[in-house]
View 1 (cartoon, helix red, strand yellow):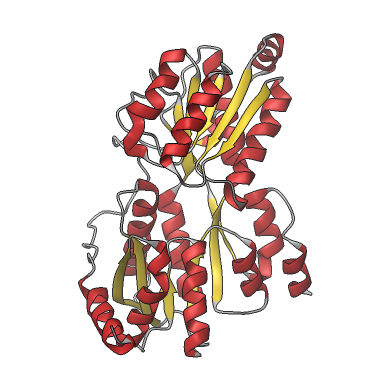
View 2 (cartoon, helix red, strand yellow; view 1 turned 90 degrees about the horizontal axis):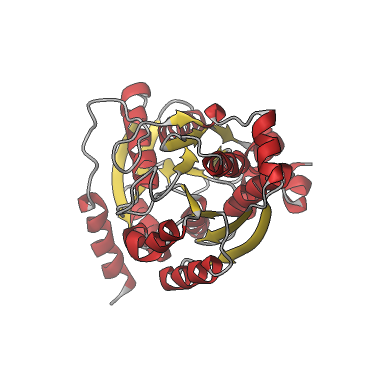
Length: 356
């Protein structure tokens, strides 16, 4: 199919792509069954709790969907807390976003009989088949971001630890307003999948734009089911709506695809706001590029909280069903501080050099 025809079809799809209905009420972060969010700061271990844990012979394992900057920071937070509590980590696996591989990883981990398993599911719908086995062994299961379906909190798993998605949506809207100087046309790319984490963040972004920033207008909406198609989606959106000066992208990996399109089109006037930190996005921001701001949650704290919640469950203590950490706007002027707050470390040297 000729490129111009293909882009025209995609451009039409942009405006037809599942427009988000206006929400009457301000979005709030909830769990898969409507569970209310509780601050992660509520999870506290006393000195006697720590002593009791150290007196045991407890072990822990991780079954990750994929390991990258964000999940590695979550893992480090949990591992540091387990070390403080005298809990030995016996395994950590990386499924590479392969659901079948993650199921195999969990079966391998269960052979080690860990006291605790922390996991972010590749496929939440495969809950009973993949994670039901964990509950049957008595291993304490803590989910990150998204609980697997078909399991009962408090019985089959301890809790889910995530970021406050409503706050992230509000922060991205605030960052977009700053990037555009309070006035501009926005292209809104949302995650077109049944994934509560991104769905709630996306909805909160739209609600905040529509209710708090009258100088901003969302003129194009496009669903992204497959991140590999992000460049086609962005091309179509900008072709049909050249008046766009700001684009919201649901996380940083596809944001890099939008960045590539802006460079190809020579659109240095368009700003990108997205979610989560990684080196390429931070490097563009440090150089004053199109990526104006990234909203980052407290990834390291998610790991610390998950470890504490799991430890409390070993002591037969009740844990709330949905624990959330905060998030902040990271821009060029606070990149070092923002990276530390989110990932508990220094930005890569390439980013630090670009800030000089």
